Length: 141
Image 1: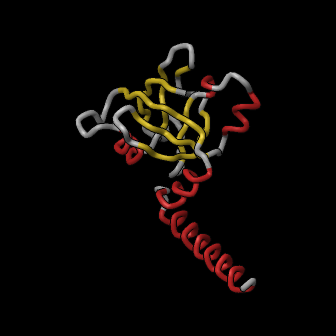
Image 2 (image 1 turned 180 degrees about the vertical axis):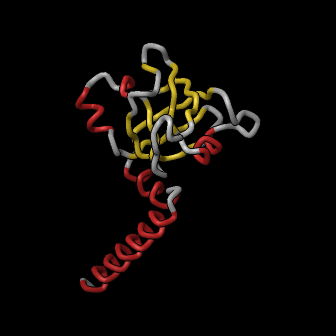
């Protein structure tokens, strides 16, 4: 999906947002099953200026926007918003393209996640995978 979004900061008035998550209106997906499949999935969010972030998607009924309008609100952390915006345009609206991440992008997301504990645990998981691959190669030699 490609649309113009304005940022709504995560506060107590809107809702809490965990690091690594982004929320949009449920009206962007017409089918209920598509919304269920999209929830918690990693999505690539790319701005027109070239900034790219990866976040898990969730929905908020309080946010405005739909495909018919082509405009909407996005609940996003400040660091993610700064990465998407040009330096001169930190406020206002920006054009975003939101697509489901592929396997390689999910792997990259595990190294760039905003939560340090998540990044460290994924680094340990990768070390475990590397060691197991090396042991399989040595076992069959």
